[in-house]
Amino acid sequence: MKILLAGGTSMLAQALRPALAPFAEVLTAGRSGCDMELDLAWPAERMALPAGLDAVIHLGAHFGGQSFADMLAAEDVNVLGALKLADACVRAGVGQLVQVSSIFAALDQDSPFHNVYALSKRHGEELTQLYCRSAGLPLAIVRPAQMYGEGESFRRHQPFVYMLLDRAQRGEDIVLNGNHDAQRNYIHIADVAEVLARVVQQRVEGRYDCASLSNARFSEIAAAAIAAFGSAGTVRFDPSKPDTRDNAFASDDSLYQRIDYFPRISLTEGFAREAARRRALP
Image (cartoon, rainbow, N blue to C red; front, side, top):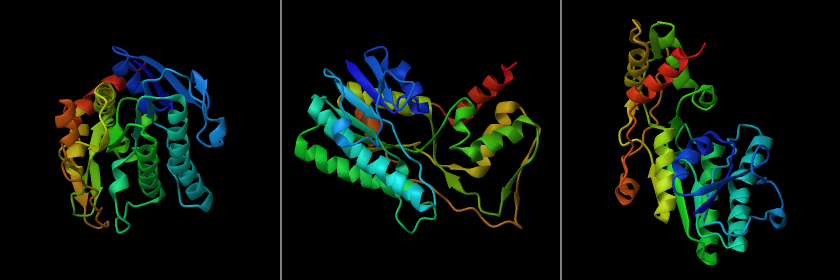
């Protein structure tokens, strides 16, 4: 197989390459540092993909923000960019498009975590589905939960997790706001990479969640960080601070059943890997 990773310098692209390597030739595309140049902000007519691609995995994303410029950019990249890439796939005769979205695309406007990133990801899904259906392009949409892994590059998008790891590494107590033990859903990036590799290899179509099958409470996440470093710190709550809201998701194993693979890396193991990486640093 020949597979192109659009957004080829992303963290997920780096994890995907070794997962795809046993059965595919992997090319990368992006604004810089890739095998070929590709910018989702380009006009549609400038987007040209090489012939002979069995699949394109779309990993590019704009994470948005609060300003008008940020909102405009998120819609331009996550919606129009996705549509232009799908059209480029059709023109190049690509066999399958895999669009990596986000589980946040399922959030409604009443959620405190609803933002332009979530909204634009949902818009991107719907527009790409509409176009691919009419164009006859096989499409899989995969919605990962919040991803973490080993290395400093994950800190930007998962500051809470890496704050816990930092405190555990220093042997400090971890103090959580409020009385409510809030829930989150995290999945290790290596599990997401294996899921995507199987989606491509098995030519899966449809839209699926890709999340941990159980949500984790803040106290459990903090305890896993402390255990990873063998810290003497404790976990406690500060009732003088406001409670943190849940951002949990219902368990859905339909994709895992279909591809015969379930996430294998627990928070305990994932954090232990990050602790080992830090201990190995000079």
